[in-house]
Amino acid sequence: MPIAINSTNKEIHDLRMKFGCSQEIMGHIIGVTGRTISRWEDEQHEPHDLARRQVKELYKVLEKMNGIIKPGTEKEWLNAPNQALENKKPLELIEQGPEGLREVLRLLDRLEWGIAT
Image (cartoon, rainbow, N blue to C red; front, side, top):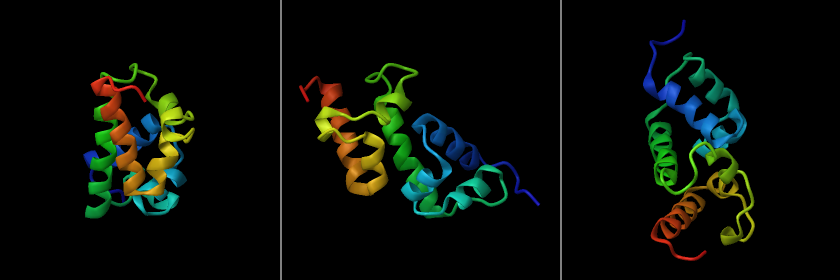
C-alpha cells in the first residue's frame, strides 16, 4: 500500500529531473539503489533521515544556481564538461560524494562573485 504523499518523495523526483539523471545515478549520489529511488518516487516507501539530508544538500546546488545559471539550462550545465572543473561534469563530481558536491558549490560561489574560472 502506498504511503501518504510526502513532499520529500516529490522533491526527489523533481530534483532528479532538474539534475537530468537516472534513478540509478540519483541513488548513487544519495547512497541507495536506483530501485530504492523508484520506490520513493512511487510513494511505496519514505526516504530515511540520511537521504532527506542528502536531498537538502543537493537542493543547495539548485538554489546556488538560481541567478547564476540561465533558468531552464540547469540540467545542461550540470551535465556538460566544465573547464573550471578540469573538464569534468558537475554532476560527475556530485556523484563522487561530499567533496565533489563542495567543489561544485565552490565553483558556483566563484561564478556568483564574478571571479574568473
